[in-house]
Image (cartoon, rainbow, N blue to C red; front, side):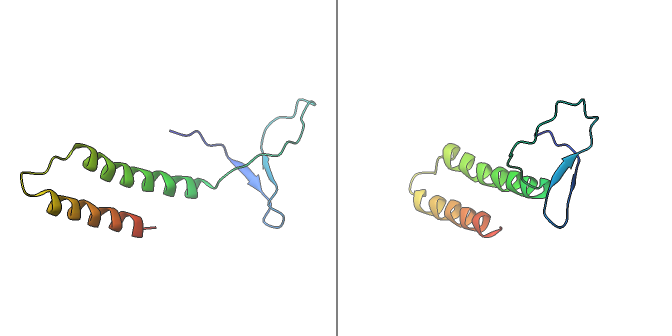
Length: 84
């Protein structure tokens, strides 16, 4: 699982600061971050899509049933894609 840290964020400009003891050698550097809720949402979406992909990879339709199986998997994939 991804490790998170708690920080202070300015509601005006968005500046983010972590609460740590400064040892006098700090430098500000540009960094890209995502909100934890956005990250959690992305993980849920990935999990749902991986479940469908796993079914596509491992399901073998019965003889003569490939089209029904394909359409069922297609419907599940559409549902997962719509849930965002």
